[in-house]
Length: 423
Image 1 (tube, rainbow, N blue to C red):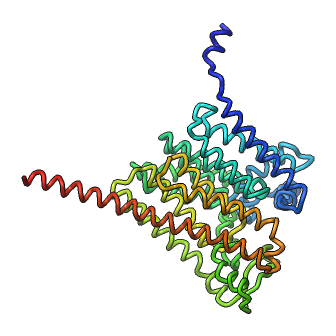
Image 2 (cartoon, helix red, strand yellow):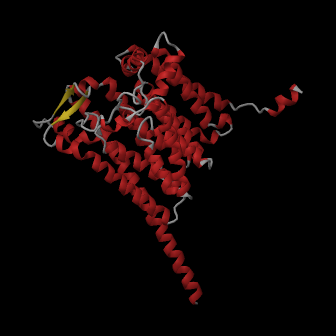
Image 3 (cartoon, helix red, strand yellow):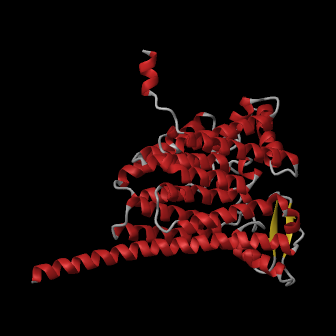
C-alpha cells in the first residue's frame, strides 16, 4: 500500500527546489543587510511595533474605533507578527514575511507542477531583492502577496475568488484597486461582478462594525488628503530637476506633522491640491481605453494585463506619495503580464527590474545624498521616476493600440465579408 501511495506521488522537479532555495537565500540576505546597516526596517521596529503595543495597552483598535492612516484590515499582518513571537516584534515580522513569500513562490509554481511559470517566480525574487530590505519591511509585502495569489486565480478562471483577493488587498494598500477596475471592464457578467464586490466589501465593513467600528473606519481616506508632495513621489520630478540644475526656490524639507520629507517650491501647494483630481482623470482615461479595447474584441487576459498596469501607474505617477516600497505596486502588475504571457511585455519587465534596483540605491544607500540635495541622490531619484513615467506612457500606447488594432481587424473582416457576398 505504501509503495502504491509513493508511486502516485511524483517527485518534485529539482528546478522547483532551486527556485525556492534562491528565494529563501535572497530574503535572508535582505534580512542580514537590513539589520546590519542603517535602518531600512525602521517602520517595523519603531512604528508597527508601537502601533500594536499602544493598542494592547489602550485596548483600542486603529482604523476601527480610532483614526488610522490605513484601512483596519492592515492590522491583520501586524497582529500576526506579534503573535508569532511576542518577545521581539521584528523577529515575528520577518518570520511571517519570509514564510509568506516562500508560500507565494510555491503557489505560483503550482507546487512544482507549473514550472512554465518560473519566469514570474524569478522576476518576483529579483525585484524583491533589488528593491532592498524595505521590500520585506513594509505592509506592501502583504498586498503584493494577495495580488499575486489573485492573479493566478484569475488566470485559472476563478474570477470570483480572484476579485475577492484583489478586494482584500485593496483594503491593505490602495494599488490593487487597479485590478478591480480591470476585472470589472473585462468581466463577462458585470452585474455579478458588482454583486460579489458588494458582498465582499459588506463583509469587511460588517466585521469592522462588530468590532465596535465607527466613522474612523474611513479615516484613512481623509487623514493624508491635506499633505504636500513627498520628495520620492514621481510628480516631484519637476522640482527635483530644478534642484539638480541649481535653480533657486526649490528644496527638500522635513514635515513634522506628516513625519516625512517633502518638496517645497513654486507651485507645489497648487499642484498638491489638484493631484487627486488629476489621478481620477488619468484613471478615467484608462477605463475608457479598457472598454474600447474590449468592445474591439481584445483578448480578455491581454486587456486585463494592460489595464491593470496602466491603472497601477496612474495611481503611482499621479500620487503625492512615492515611497520606495511603492515599487512593489508595479511588480504586482508586471507579474500578471508575465503569467499571462502578454505580448510586448519585455520592456515592462526590464524597466521594472531597473527601477527596482534604483529604489534600493535611493533608499537607504544614497538617501542622505538625496536629502542633502546632492546631485547623485537627486539624479538617481529622477531616473527612477522617469522609468515610472516611461512605463505609464508605454502602457497607454499598448492599451490604445489594443483597441485600435482589434477595431481595424474587425473592420477589415467585415469589409471582406461584404465583398464576398457582393461577388
